[in-house]
Image 1 (spheres, rainbow over the protein chains, first blue to last red):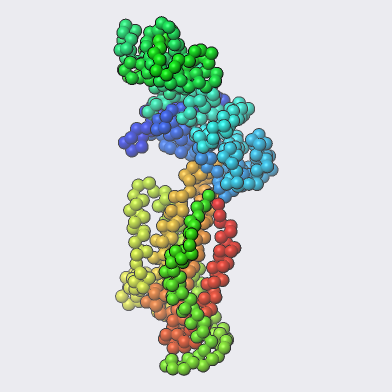
Image 2 (tube, chains in turn orange, purple):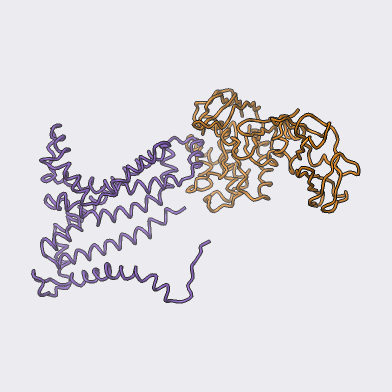
Length: 333
Length: 293
């Protein structure tokens, strides 16, 4: 168990800057999710913590110790890879025991620790099998088992669920969360899926173009996004952005963001829109409309409300408190 | 899921297979059959008549100490060529695999020796080690070592092994490099995080994952050492000194075409044929089973 600290961490590949200075303080036992679109540098950041990439400048500390020049094996971490990275020629048992054998842990203790992990992950009956004889979810569990048995101070997850189907992903997500709670290990988890980020994180880091746009508790980030990017990336369906030129006198900032659930269709509204189509999802209905200037907006309303017909003209309204204004650089004003 | 191509008629598939069948029959089955037939006779030196001797050629062959010595020579030679060419190739491939910049140049240069025909390679090495004019032999002389592969059996064997293995390194290197690059990088990284240093990783992860490639190369290289090194041996030592480098294939040639003992030569071909069949069956039946993932 340990804290992790990043101080102005930067990474360049040749002349290309990938990470433009990230600062982060992770408390002991905290679950941090780094979320962002592909190419935002989130995996690179994780790999720098793991020691698989060199740090171009800045400092990485694990448990208060500067680890910039420390080999991955000496950082007291374990990592779960996107493709699981199991050793294909070894049985499940050997996969999990590999690190312990190298560390020259006594044989009886290895067996104990693997057995405990296998029980925790319901892998007991598969210990003699090889990875190719397992399903995706089971392979994922083996990869986690391999991380658990070494009792690391920090868990690193690099998009561990993206190779699984949707149903399994939800199930494994819960298991990962429960496991991390039970073990009390500090975890750093990278994903491009904002739902995973929202559900797993104690705090999340939203990355955009090599910069940490916002760090905070999931609901705080959702309720109070600091940038236009964060507002658009976190939340599904995404935040609607309107051109303030359509709404004279409202603000001098060029862009207005309103979450779909904060828009209402009313008799008297602030903005006229034409309904493109409606998606009735049962408990709620998503109504996709087009406003002047051609922007798409989505209204999320309770299923009990009246659903307007396609092509119908409606009035949209919102509370002032729910309006988020962004300047030309995408910063919240 | 395996996709199978199915044909409606019988004639098209036969037509498609025919060229290969013809080549196999003309260049393999026919000569092999002829060798088996001839091994049962002793022809006169002018090829005008043949005398039936049954298995006489074989009896004579296996009571011949030179022939039995040739078996040992072949075994030593094949093992050395295979180990040297695969060992060096694997070492170079591991180095090339670690390179990020300039691996293309390195790779291209390493492939060049493969383009050199065995006989030419033999002549190249012969020139370098020629006892009178060879560069390497001259330098060895300066160091006080009197190199003479014409007289020294060990040196002769060493030279043909090196000359045979040299061109082969390129070929093996290519396959090893491809094999190394096919190992997912994350598996290596996972092992690194698990605490395995370079050598441990190589021993416990890389080499086992490379075993399908290694096995394939083992088969190909042994067959190469058995049959395709004729040119090298012929140009460098002609099987000498004292038959020290006369491998089985070379003996087929020297007994048959130099010694004009065609019956014995044919019998030796049959023995080789038998040997290769066994080798192939053993390799595919027993060894391949253990190297699948």
